[in-house]
Image 1 (cartoon, helix red, strand yellow):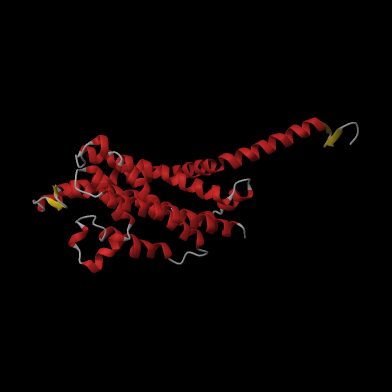
Image 2 (tube, rainbow, N blue to C red):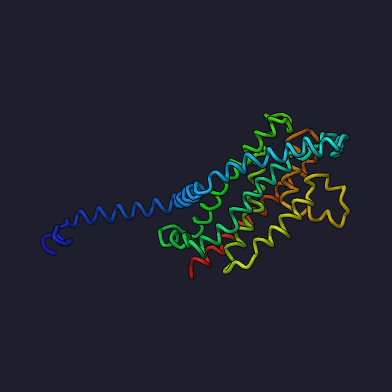
Length: 292
C-alpha cells in the first residue's frame, strides 16, 4: 500500500472508498439492531407462503364447519337458551366467542411447536439469524410478531363468519374479540415457544401437549357449556386455562351480561401474565441455545 491506496486483486481501492464501505457496513449493522425483529418477522411470514393454502383453507374452513355443525346440529337439539349468569342467550351465540379463541390458540400451538424445533435442529435457521447482528431477543420477538400476523388473519376471518351467521352482538364492540383472541394465542403460545426452545430432541413431546394440555383445556374451559356446570374438582382446569379467561372476555364483548370489573381485570391479568412470562422464558432458552 502506498500513497493511501490498497491493492485489491488488480484493481486499486482508495482508502476513502474503504472508509465508505466500513461506514455502510456499520450502518447496516445498526439498522439490523434497530429493525432486526421485523426482519425475522418478515422471514417467518414469507416462510408461511410455503403452506399458504393450508392457512387460508384452515382459517376459512374451520369456522364454517364448526358454525354449521353447531347451528344445524347441537343448536337444533338444545332448544332452551343457555343461562349465562343472569343473561339467557342462544347456544351458537354462547359458543361463538369460545370458538374464535380456540382458533387463535390453535394457530399458536401449530406455529410455536415443530417450526421452532426446525429452527434449532432440522433447518437451523435460528443459528443463521444469530450469526448476523441480530440478538437472541430480537429473534424471539420477530418469531412472535410473525406468528401474530397469522393469528390476526385467522381471528379476523373467524369473526367475519360469526357476523354472517350472526352469532355475535353489536359489531361496534364485539370486533374487539379479535384483540382478545390475539392475547389468548400469545398466552398459550409463548410458554409453548419457551418449551419448544428448550427441547433438544423430538420424542413426541408436542403430541403429549396436544393430548394432555390442549385437549383438556378445550373440553373443560367452558367452551360448550358454562364452567359452573362442571363439578368443582374439574373447574380448576378452566381457572388456570388461558382459553377460559379469553372466552369469558369474549362473551362480555359479544353480548351484554353482568360481569364485575374485578373479574374482567383478573381475566386480563392472567392472560398478560401467561404471555409475558412465556416470552421472558423463551428469550432465556433462545439465548442459551444460540450461545452454544
